[in-house]
Image 1 (cartoon, one colour):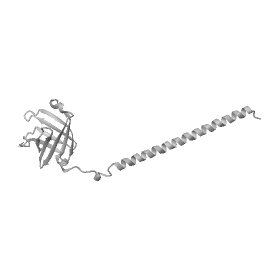
Image 2 (cartoon, helix red, strand yellow):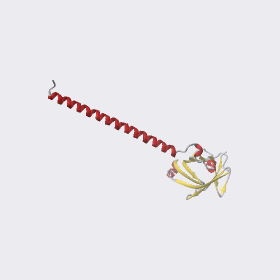
Image 3 (tube, one colour):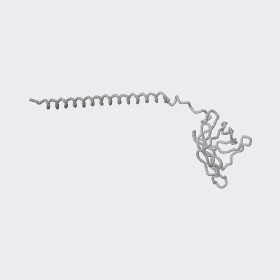
Length: 175
């Protein structure tokens, strides 16, 4: 027959085993709840992103006609009160890509670049804002500055009128 001491030991072992099973069951329930919570948060986030994103390209607003017309290469033709035909050899060009712009001025006789600068731009209606992100040493002091203009494109002529700056220029579409 078992001694009371052995019965106490067996009882303690059963209690310990029971506590382990309870702890394990509690850990599994906690893990299951965490997995369910993670799944819910992931699904909710995906749903919110899907609702916030445009459904298709047709739903996105299209670029204005002016935004399309400004894209390209332009040769400097002067100022609004003194427009000339750009020289045959070029030498002073402005480029728009849809997000980026740059201006390069080179000596028409030697081909050496006098200055080059560019960066990003935004167009809201006929309001253009150019931010200078890079420039040659001669005009590097303008890096980081933003210049505002009123612009128009009529046929092959691009005109910008400085808003708070003196850069009133006319450019002809490069051929």
